[in-house]
Length: 294
Image 1 (spheres, one colour):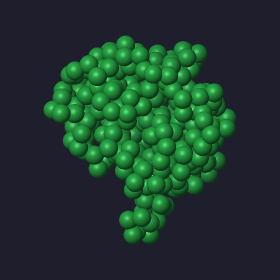
Image 2 (cartoon, one colour; image 1 turned 30 degrees about the vertical axis):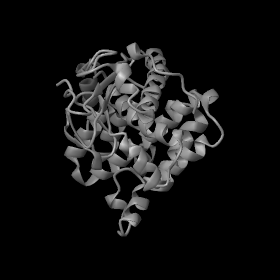
Image 3 (cartoon, helix red, strand yellow; image 1 turned 90 degrees about the vertical axis):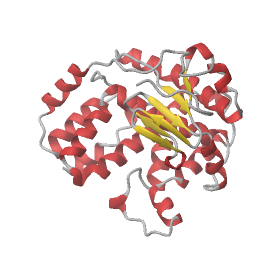
């Protein structure tokens, strides 16, 4: 994917590699049907008053913490983003994602605050606790950080057989999708529902993850002019290789749907493809089947 070089003043980057610094320690908006979807799930599936849920979102505000653009705990943004090609590509993707999603939020009347990207090596510290390479890339809603040990890209290629720049961009875009869910209040509401209904926790987690896959596809679609031949195949290959059933089989386990937390390979590919084909965040309603089933 042909992305522009990042502007150091427009992205939030923190570098914990080499003993670097530690991280700094929601309005019910609406991207498409997101917030309303969660309220309806609570009302229809779990018997929760949707008015109370929406009210809680409105009172929560959309202020988010973290560093300001261009700030980081240690060092220099430009230097951190050019340590190696993987770092540069990650910063280019972050910059593109910010440029793509900010207008969507503005059009929806929701306050937008970009996430920060935190590079670490082997071990780091996040607002959600310890960061370890074995965890893979993750998003921490407490500090709005996308945490990445860029060695994961090598594992993605060598262990999972998912090569290519778009496969790596998809990883960042997926975690960015969780930031979108955090800004709109979806993550908080789903977490609340999971606590109230532990038996549904995995089911709801899968919906969040698949929606993040769809949002990654929407980002790609909104930058369709940057897509090169083979890119989409790279992304779909990556989505397939990190599906719960494929990972379980690779670990010598029998796939059990009730144990899925991110979705099957087929589901992940389906929702990434849907985002790419529609280019519409409203199409990322991964909760629709729960409402129909109730």
